[in-house]
Length: 76
Image (cartoon, rainbow, N blue to C red):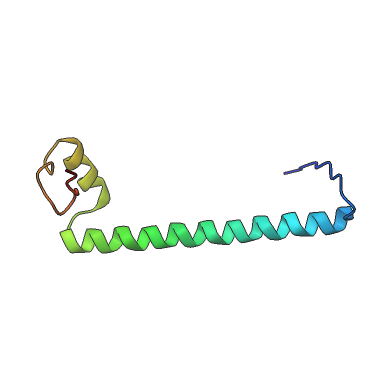
């Protein structure tokens, strides 16, 4: 993918490119970590309640867990 930036600073194109590349690389690693962390949370939840996510979604959509405090926090 090509990207063109207009940089109006005293920094060289090389310096600006390195900063942008570094920032994007950091965000990529952070996103991968978050995906992995949320997958772990889902796996732990599935193990705890003996449900796979697709089954849980179907049951929630069918209204089966509306009164179940394990899945929904009540707000006053």
